[in-house]
Amino acid sequence: MLKSLVLALTVACVSGFQSLALSALKSTSLSSSMPPRKWNEMVDPSSRSAACPWLPRPIALDGTMIGDAGFDPLYLSSIPKNFAGFIQPPQWEATEGIDTLYWMREAELKHGRITMLAWFGWLAADGAFGFPLRFPADVYQSVPSSYAAHDLMVSNGSLGFMLGAIGFIEVVLGAALVEVSKGESEREPGDFQLDPLNFLKGKSEEEVNRMKLRELKNGRLAMLAFAGVVTQCQIGHTTFPYIS
Image 1 (cartoon, rainbow, N blue to C red):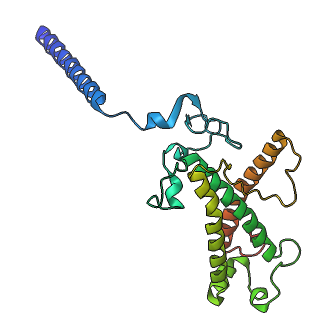
Image 2 (spheres, rainbow, N blue to C red):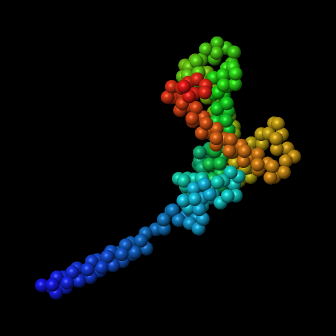
Image 3 (cartoon, rainbow, N blue to C red):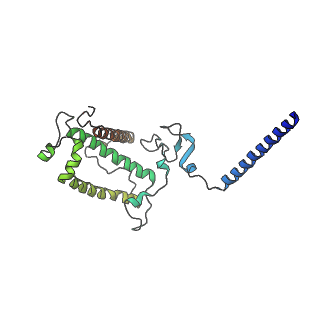
């Protein structure tokens, strides 16, 4: 009886190992017939992200761009895409295009600059610097808070004018990106040659790069700060310092 039990267990174990071996063989054959994973083109498996060391480094973030800390946990910068179509329909003319990293740095700088102005304006209008900084007309002076300003300005038409003005500016500034997409300009992302106070005049490359890094960091902080202010106002804290 015991010998029969041992024999039965031995046969069962051998059969189990054979099934596993066949399954592994089938899996290997299936994997070899599948196309290469896109993931392998999006990361550098030999190095880690400086900002997220538990993740492989995004292939496009090699540290050469100012402010590049390797932070891209969603690997958006590694997705190959031609963004020229967002500013000029491809049917108009063939262009070299705008790659993902260039477009994202352009967007980061633009959003950072806008939110630096927006955060300052939001607080200034609410009297954070000692007195409310607003246009003198009663329609602006009577607004209870920056948070309430949006709906009130929409209703009296002021925001419609602002939307049109900003739209015009966006179209004009888009011309610089058209030149980049056509290969007619080697312009760096976000560079509009705007330096009326000559902060960069006579500066060395190292000093210029330091100023650019400061702008990036302040812009990133402003995006978080503005989101925080709006969130606090949304939950009911509409007066400076937006905590009570």
